[in-house]
Image (cartoon, rainbow, N blue to C red; front, top):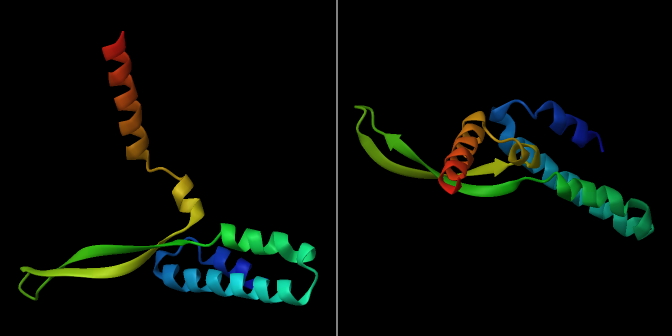
Length: 109
């Protein structure tokens, strides 16, 4: 269960996203292996906790540029979205939602 602590330390460093996702996957496997050895009720909460903190895997695209700066196509890459990132809304998005609500409120009144 020490990998949970290690993952928490890597949380703020975006260059470790893939390693952190792999660590979360190993953590789930570890908890499930313990679950099969011990009574299921004993560690079921640990498996649920590990699965709750596992990231979602997304396929994203980014533009590639050649040595001369011209567009050279697109590259697909895997990105991971962790649960704590999904709960945080960017400030710009929050401001846009507040503006939209204000506009809708003006139209209805």
